[in-house]
Image 1 (tube, helix red, strand yellow):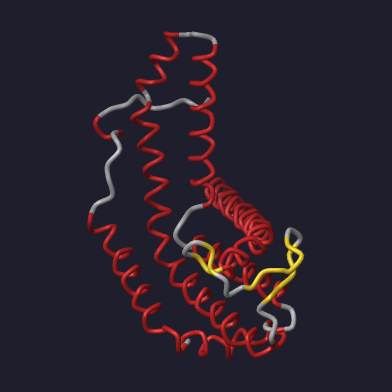
Image 2: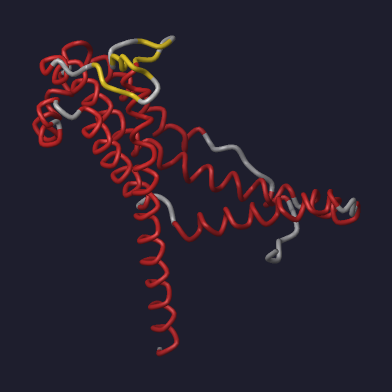
Length: 233
């Protein structure tokens, strides 16, 4: 494991300040307002339909439309997060946490009490790094929500209006002979949200991995170029 600094007063994790959380709170309030404004009239959904109607296929291929929208939402949110988070720093933090947890787990399995004690003494530093990573993700959340919520509002419009007009709100699924009505409510959640999540996650994860790999390689190339420039100078 990479050398870890000794815990000190500066290494102790600190809760995010109110000022850092304020933008997220404001955006969350705006999101709730947008959802209420959209209401049953689908004002925002109708507006976005001028852009996304290119993939609605007049409601004839509901699942395909939901998959494509899942890809679009994941791609946009990943790109937005790239402007607020350093992919290399995030990867380093994840590797540090993984390495630390692995060594602590191995020390406990081997009953190495000395090593366990030393590692536990370093947990404040580990928690600080974890908190730092969480804070960065929290800062990016408002911006991604600005994208995600309107897309959800368009998907709702697509199901409520486009599919209803085409008579295709009932789709076939492998585990049901009669299919599922996207307007049906399971507990408190409409079926279209569950289906949308189910069909969009696999493709979304693939798209996110591709984009992050590209961004990571690009950032590495920039760092290497900067190092070469410094050496020449």
